[in-house]
Image 1 (spheres, rainbow, N blue to C red):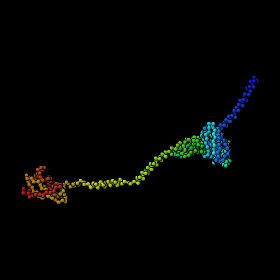
Image 2 (image 1 turned 45 degrees about the horizontal axis):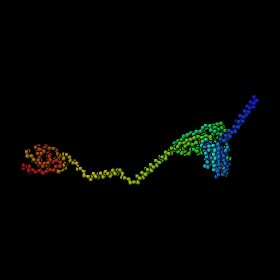
Image 3 (image 1 turned 90 degrees about the horizontal axis):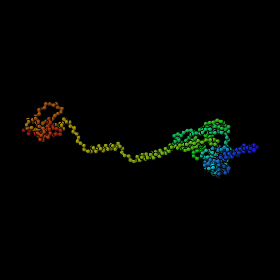
Image 4 (image 1 turned 120 degrees about the vertical axis):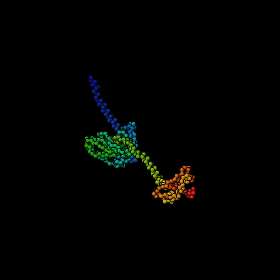
Length: 413
């Protein structure tokens, strides 16, 4: 029994020693997984370069290296990327172990020192780390004092409210409203907090713009914040809207912007309308320069005049006879009376002496007429040479000329 007690007594002590030995190992592993940045020199002048190396980053991740002013590793970049020399930044991709090494040129940031070498991921989950660095000859100013002990945290997911209008379809800047809810988890009140909103396209770093929210958030309270977000004119594609406060990224929101097809339609119509307008102008110029033909009305009048002259020059049909049927050409009103033609001689009938014919006046009253003797048969029995029928009254037909009457021969017979 005593031997068994000697063997089992130290078992709890061994278990406790084993747990204590594992705690530092886990803490060291957790610290090793955090992104870290080192600089080959703590100070360098403008125009030189330093080697920046990092470890603990995600494998195969693109990171950006920048020299930033008005920043410390403890507080981060107070002025955001607007305080960094963005034009002289460099990009590098981590290896399979999450390490990198890159030469960075030294440039003066737009904000005064204290300065840092700021490293942040360009894609995926936002991670950042800073290393203290001094730009030789650059002015140094103290950092702005922190206001109170308030600390804001995003309590709900962010969203983009709003929609694109007709002008956006024709290339106007797309605009949305970033809406989220924050809560004060610190010990002091936060008055009129200043947020930073940036939009990144693809692998490019976001361009941060400051947006101030008017109001006071007391410890333990929450508030709904709405901040405007606007892109450049004609922007399209996949964007990521980021929210930063106090040098830390609080939230990210994807934003897919459609292509402004109205601009494409405008150029297509312009390529069709301009050539058509030039063609119409050319036709108008040619029509004005070339000689004009005579007017249609004048040509018609000219043709009518020519046809009238041609008809007048051609011999026409004889004029119709307008003599009244009851007047002979030689016995009309106002004409000179002529002798009527002699009667036909018939030996079998009584002989009636014929004398000079008395002109007939249409206005004179009609008197009793003498009985006429037997007339010669018509047809082939009439005397040759007469040539026309005998009309009562002694006047010939239309167009007949009077023939001389031989009264001496008739009387002798």
